[in-house]
Every structure is written in structure tokens, then in C-alpha cells.
Image (cartoon, rainbow, N blue to C red):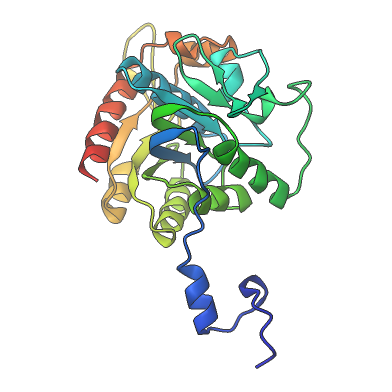
Length: 280
């Protein structure tokens, strides 16, 4: 055995130091002037499944219930939350920390796009800087009192999702997927990561599940028959909602009007999430 450098990330040996390191609490301390009661991560195993739309819709549904709601946009290289809510003004600082922007209905939002001079500027940063920025959104932002915070994560299991799992006190995650052949792999990756990090899985949302024909009013399934029931049963997770392909939702996001959307499926998902969180 080579001499120990105490850097477990560069060592393949199994020893007491590694075991102790894995059990350390790496949660970052929240901004001292803030109080966030529940933190829910929204994850996906791949991009393009509508994770940010689901995050935005859930935040809107919880805000309508009278909860103080916030969205932490952890997708640093692909932020879309400000656009969905129509936020144009930049965040600025105070003696208590960085002040998040507030949407028309009172949802607090922090995103890298609120700090960039031009929202179309690319964020070309390496993993450690991306992870550090997410931590600062938790430690340096003056969130005030928040009942429910939704964290919109980038897809996959890389640096930023790992940082969120380790650094934020997640009460649970929601897995967003779509009804394609890759769905089992997508869900499995996200579920296994949550299990490895000891984070509860609140359930799965299937986005773009079907569309309703405006003429015949029948449901059509462009991606084929869903296998979500089998996968949910295999991993003992709840199906929170099946969201249809709805051009009006996409239009609302593009125009910054997500808070105007009425979505019974998202409302039902919020019911289930509220109930599950209450039992944890």
C-alpha cells in the first residue's frame, strides 16, 4: 500500500479514513438570515425532458396554495427559469446577502442569468466553479422565509447534481422523464444516485406523455406506450403525474407567463408531493 495522502478521491484503497469521509456531513450552512423549511430537487437522467418546465409548474402550484416558494436554478450552464417567469431585472446585493428576484406572484428566484451582464452570454466554467456557484446560491443568497424551495438541477449525475445532493439538505427528489425507450435507464440512474446519497425519492413525473387532438379530443401517444407503471413498481416509487404535450405551456414559458398556466395534472402532482412530504 502506498503512503496515504488523505485524499480519498485519488485513492482506490478501502480503509477507515475513506469510511469516515463518506459519513461526514457535507451540508453547507444556509444564509444566516434565511429559513428554508423544505428543499425538493428536480432531476433527470438526460436533457430535453422538460425538467425546468416541471420545476416551474410545481413552484407555481405551491405558491398558489399560499406557501412561500422559491426556485434555486442549479442548471448553471443552461439556465431557463428566469425566462419562464419573465424575469428581466438583475439580482443585487444587500448587507444580508444577494437578493433573489421575485416573480409577479411572489416566487423567489436565483439563477446565474440574474447575475450575468447579458443573459445570452455562455457560462464556460469548469466543474468546481459550477459547483461552487451552486453552493453560493445557498449560502450567500438572502432567501428570507421559504416554505418550499425547488432546485432545478442540470441533467445527469455530474459535479453539480452531486454538489446539490451533498451540500443542500434535500427533503426529497422528483425524477422527470419522458415515455421513450430510454426511460428505464434514465429513471434507474437517478434513482440509484438518490439511494446512494440517502435522499428520499418523492416520485416520478412523465412529461410529454401524450397529446389531445383538438378535433377528436382523443389522447394520442407519439412516443408509444409508456412503461412507467412497470418501472415505478420495480423501484417502488410513486407516479406523480403524466403531463401532456401542450403547446400553450411551451408558449407560456417562451413568453415568461408560466404563472398564468392552469394545469390540473401539475395540481394533482402538487397534492401528492405535499402529502408525501408531510409523512416524511
